[in-house]
Length: 436
Image (cartoon, rainbow, N blue to C red; front, side, top):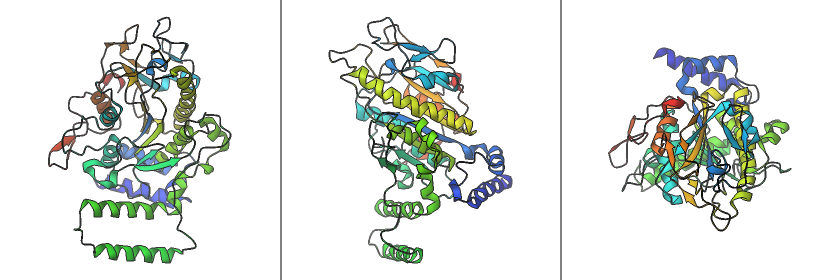
């Protein structure tokens, strides 16, 4: 135990000694002392980046094409770097690095409603009475909590998080949201998306001493509150105020500043909000953030599916493909799990508006990094894409795989708000051993 404590102090000491605090080494790769500390205590170095395809992507047009069948649509397959594994022609960057990721083609779930499916995908559980289930992001942040840092351990970039609070874990583990313009812009836009954290600087010319005095006065006033200490309202306010003060420090703000990145790399990620969000995710993971979710909206393609999926695929390819390459080049892929999924898939049959409707019965998800074996395909669907023919995989299985791949026990329990122990992953789920 003493050795582990010594390692953590060393890790923190190394980070604090750098020119930009916890993020100063962002462009300098792994420093030897930090790498040694991470190797000595692997659990402290695990992070998850969730690429969230909001709206339910047509995975039959991305990862599991059906060429030659009437359900297949106009898209062609291209070979990946793994013989026998093909994906969409509109994902060329990812096809070139097919050995870095694995595809689960046999996801089969029950929820076809957006709201319920998002909840289940985020928590692994269906809603149950008064239980306030936390999301997977909150759970990962909570389980790896321990280092005192200025940046929240769970950050969501773009759009609205699936779960906006920390559930029964409390507001400390709620997602910190980074918003910004850009929407569903193409990857090669000339002007970068405006991803930023608002109000990081004090209003006007307020000195650090005056800011400190204001914070102390605010703390005294909170002590006079009629609300009891420990109440949800007080806890939420204190957590929000603490986050704000910490993020206003220059060292913390630097983690979100994409202008510090090489311009050529920014171009490679794509200048849309999703691509720049993927780049920000890499920076945040470098700074010790445990869970980063980057949202790409627009996948609810009931009409004009193929034009929209083509455009979205280009953004996905630039952001996802460059992220995997960047993480690997920096020696970070082995300690960072990347998950790409939506809440469900879309109907293999094409509707009368050249669109695809909700389809949870057979769809696909992609995993890479953090010990997940690359170049694998789990499960298969029928020739028409309608049914799973082998290795049916549920959300609970995927969730258990995520936890196990980053070194967490899926069966570990936390006490809920109703004094009932809840496991990290739904106990019905089993990790996908083929990938681990």
